[in-house]
Structures are given as C-alpha cells and as structure tokens.
Image (cartoon, rainbow, N blue to C red):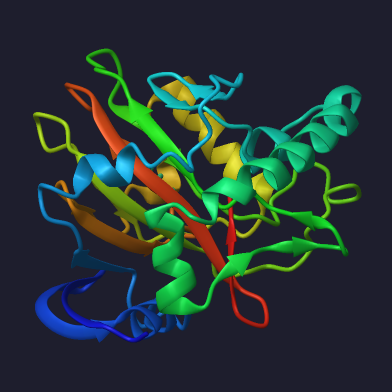
Length: 269
Ligand SMILES: O=C(O)CCC(=O)C(=O)O
C-alpha cells in the first residue's frame, strides 16, 4: 500500500517543506544519500497513546539498556556490540532468545505494521532462525545535568567492538525511524553533523574525546542542523551521520527502529 504524504526534507544545505513522498521513496532517497532526513506528519493527537500503549510491546521491565537519562526496556544490539569478551556469548544468546520472543508480538504493533504495510519490511535475519529485534519504546527522563540526553553517536549494525566475532560484516546505509509520542517541554531536537565515522575505532575515539573534554574536534567546522519533530511526527534519517538528542528538560517518549536494505527493507534494533 503506497501512501503519499507531504514531507519536510533535510540536507546539510537546507530544509524544504511540502515535498510529496511515499514511504519507499523517502527511504530510498536517504539510502542513496540524496537526503539526510525526512519528516512526515503521521498521527493525530487521539492516536498517540494507542501507538505508545500498544499491547504488542513487551510488558515486563526487562533489564534494558540504560543510557541514563534514556531508558530502553529491552536488550538491544548496542550493548551487545560493546560487550566484553567474557560476557559476549551470554549476551548474544540472551539477545536472540529475547528478539525471537518479543518480535512475535511486536509484529502486530501499529508502529511495526507501518513498515510491514508500507515498505514490505521484515525482521533482519541472521542464519536460518535468528532475527534482530524489530522496535523499542524509549523514555527520556528529565535531564538538566548534561548537554545531550543521548550523546553524539551513530547507529551501525556492523560496528561490533570485535570485528572478528561480530556477526554482521556488511557496511549498510542504516536508517533510523523515530516516531515522537510526546516531546520535551523545551522541544529538544536531534542534532546532526555532516560527519560519518568510518568504523567503530574512529567512533569510539570521538566518544572518548567527548566524554573527556566535552567536545569533538573533528566536527567543529562541519555543517550541522537540528530536526525538532513534535508529537505525531515520524522522522527518518541516516543513522550513519553523527547525531545526538539535545537535553530533554522534561520527559520525552519515542518509538524507534532501524532499517537496512538486504533484499528488501529489514528492521533491526
Ligand atoms: O530520540 C530517540 O529516540 C533517539 C534518536 C536516535 O538517536 C536514533 O534513533 O538513533
């Protein structure tokens, strides 16, 4: 089902409003680097809590992935990518068991159905039985302590700490799909820098520099923009550009997932 909507499109040269795009066109234009981000008005105010409270999202408070002040109550690929050699195998087993179980119900959430219906997306497969988690709910707590509620980072499913044992080798143009359910009172946005780390080692060196000094010299003179999606807006963007969530001065809630092209659009988290 192809549905055309008016989009706001972002590149490092500027922003354009009212561009008619359907979902496959939006994803393709980001995947081929024509655009950095595309934003759609997706939900009206009455729909927001139905999407957030969908009963296909896992109920149990699993020990999630806590990047305080951001809480994701599910195991996700990020912590697995950064796992030490000692706990890698246990985390790997646990992630895949969880993903298989959670995806059964996630598949029928309104959020995941959007990508199944409009893009023909499915879960990213590993081998015959393994699949990556399809989506998460994210809760940003009030944060008055740090510059960002999610520090500068990129999301790349091939960026394992140990390339020898990390299971995904292919370097994808990964796309983040982020639905804002409720924004922060200060309209905290997502900052993008025109800079893409080539591999995990480079990304880690920037993160280390940021944590130690509060700055990253490599991005000081590059183009940047901030997208400020509000409740009901879906923001799609290339997650391979360095990006960060500004400090949320009150709670903020989002639904999110990532997609890569592998003989069709594949969801992963
Ligand atoms: O606002 C969010 O949920 C996190 C945005 C983000 O950094 C991402 O989706 O990669």
